[in-house]
Image 1: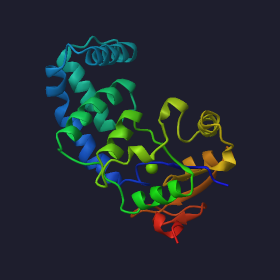
Image 2: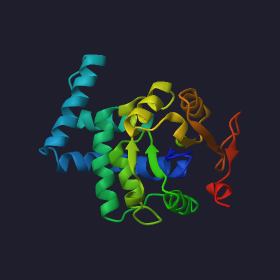
Image 3: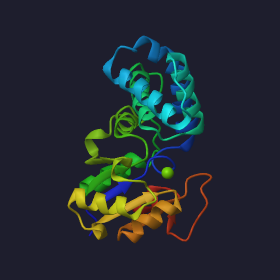
Length: 226
Ligand SMILES: [Mg+2]
């Protein structure tokens, strides 16, 4: 019996365009003013140090404050998964959501499916490459309201990469559930393949623009709610 339904975000619960056309541009455009206005805050100080260290290690260049801003913008453009970028983006998005500049996009079938899962005493979990902070913002300030009380687990790449079997084994260990009590949903076949290798049930979400694969595919969660 499935006890945990585990969801990817981008391309599964949420339109990929929301991330690439709303969140990334917002962080890109806000980086300079956010860093200049908060440059003495301890988290921002740490972010600036981490960027300087990475660039020193990789290019042996010493950066000033505006160079750090430029480097972070470059990383946004290249979608580099650097912890310092994720940290500062989390802070910038937090400010944006709080001010009501945008809401986290969720497909309309997500909330009814979560409601159904919880009504059967199973649990809802999230596993995304976005930070746990960013995940909680999407679901907390979503187009469907605050869904965070419905979600029992948030996992990010601290458990490992999404295309690695070991990450799914770690999720199984941390939730104290056997892999065959977990059902993972994603749009990416390589992620499904890793979860399946760990022993989980898997289903591919075929939202607009996603290509079908060898895995069982559904266009929306409505097909699981009859
Ligand atoms: Mg995805």
